[in-house]
Length: 257
Image (cartoon, rainbow, N blue to C red; front, side, top):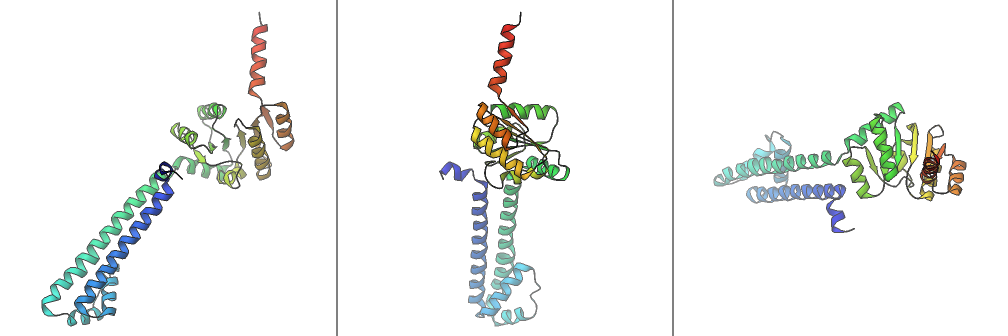
């Protein structure tokens, strides 16, 4: 994985933030314990006071024994450590980093995709567009114009960003891999379109989609008549050959007077 991939990976960033939070909490707890232990000379009491300050437990009772064991000139210092350091700094660190972490998580959630997928699972009225190719882009533009609920499935990172920038709900992943179409709600989809330039990948998609949903309308692009025939046998409801269709339209236009 390159440095640019690492920098743009929200999952990795979240993990690093979690590790940082845990490390700072551990440092604060250990430091508090050691300081209070030095003042009180009581290891169990140091643990008790540290945890009490963290959890807002009323540290009456045994903690008073710890305070009693501290020399008089150190009592105020002890109170300063337990209240300001443990209860103040530690919680400020936890709360601050927790808020930052939540903001990062929320910012990384593709709300549009989640909402569209949720609607699809409950209504069974969404469409899957697999492959944000030139053809896939035109299909999405038309579906958006008609206000249809659809989800794009694309493995290329640049195309994923293009689809999301266009405002389309998008799942990053290869539809030929196990679980990606399931993640997109293939079992409840009313239609699936395979729009990549690769006949073999489109064929794998048709097979996967038909196995997962026998009722959905499956439409695929094909570049050759042989691929067309294979996709139909695999369960495609319709195969589109753009070059052939364009050729017929061009010939018709040339033949018109």
